[in-house]
Image (cartoon, rainbow, N blue to C red):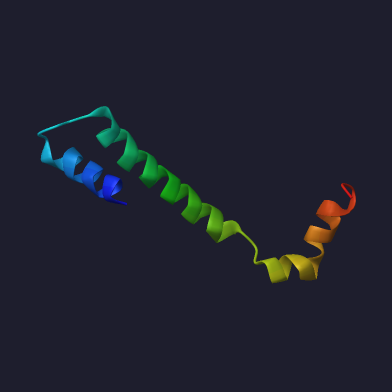
Length: 62
C-alpha cells in the first residue's frame, strides 16, 4: 500500500519521475474502472442459482 501512495506522490511531485510512478497509478485506475463496471453487470450468486445459470453452465463439464 505504501508503494501505491509513494507512486502517486512521485507522480505529482515531479522531482523523481520514474517509469513505475506513471505505470502503477494509471494501471490501478484502469483496473478499478474495469472492476466497477464488471461488478455492476454481475448477478448475485443466489440469483444465478435460482435461474439455473450455474447448473446449466457446469452440466456439460461434469
